[in-house]
Amino acid sequence: MPMLAFFLVTSVQVFYYLRYFRLLAFYKEKEKSSFREQAVSVIVCARDEADEIESNLPGVLAQTYRSTHEIVVVNDNSQDDTKYLLEGLYKDFKQLHLVELKQEALHIPGKKFPLSVGIKSAKHELLLMTDADCIPASEHWILKMQNAFQDGIEIVLGYGAYKRKKGLLNKIIRYDTFHTALQYLSCALGGQPYMGVGRNLAYKRQLFFRQKGFASHHHLPGGDDDLFVNACATAANTAVVIDKEAFTYSTPASSWSEWIGQKERHNATGKYYKSRHRWLLGFYLSSHFLFYPLMVAALFTFDWRWVLGVWGTRFIIQGLVFFKSMKKLGETDLFVFYWLWDIWMFFYYLIFISSLWKKPRNQWN
Image (cartoon, rainbow, N blue to C red):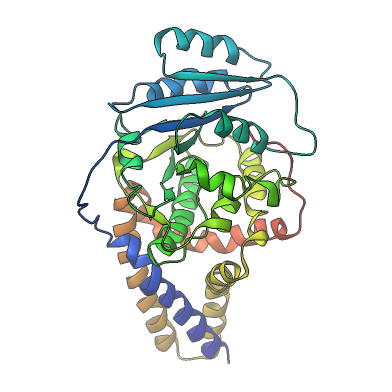
């Protein structure tokens, strides 16, 4: 019985790798028949992030982009030097558009209110989102992201990576980010877009208003990125940009408690996804969680050679997909211990399973 269950969960895992995850691993950008530079509004929300703005915002302001564009920065009730830093930057970058919020929005936790204000203040149809702690990978970030808005496309998903630093926590954060991206980017390429990340996400202004903004989940502190995309993304209106010049890099959490808090808030939104997406993710995550316990049980109750044969099949397929995907996303240093990260995911699921019912915190920064 354990061997049969182990074979079944392995089959589910292999299905996801061959049906979805290979699409990212072996992705090749299609040649576009036309190339145009469209007017773009970049939206950044900041709350007490003066240090991050000083380090990262110049990378957004100094983009090489010949067409009309603006950088809308919403200062959400900051108590530090954010206001003075922004005013100083405005003297040198006239495309910077400052929006100052001096009152809290009642009953709207998180950054949905300041983000909505930023979108309403934007002058252009194409909106490109990032965070104050993010810096574009190159001066061509705006150019690469906006170029995906071909006919019929209303949403563009990008990769929001984390900066590489020393230490185990940094590697765990970056592997978790890679693993999440492997799922949502691959599923989008497979015609099942279900989320995006606000660190690197673009959509059309008219889509935001047609969707009535964040009205359907305004009471939740999270979801301004993934729940919005989940509500309105389709196979026909969503594109993916997988180009190292179009990535963004964020400052990772510096402590375990900070990272766990971030993950609990982000994971809490998954239960509000459309039912088909909950099933899509649920089958993969549950089979992943059960894989190693069932493997151990099978080793004690069945011929070990058959067990290792089943494990080896998944190991080879997973290794190939991980290597190619990590190379695509610039995370190749994580590949050496990919098998160890895979085992770690069992404990990861145990740590964060409470996110399914635990009420998230209201902070967003």
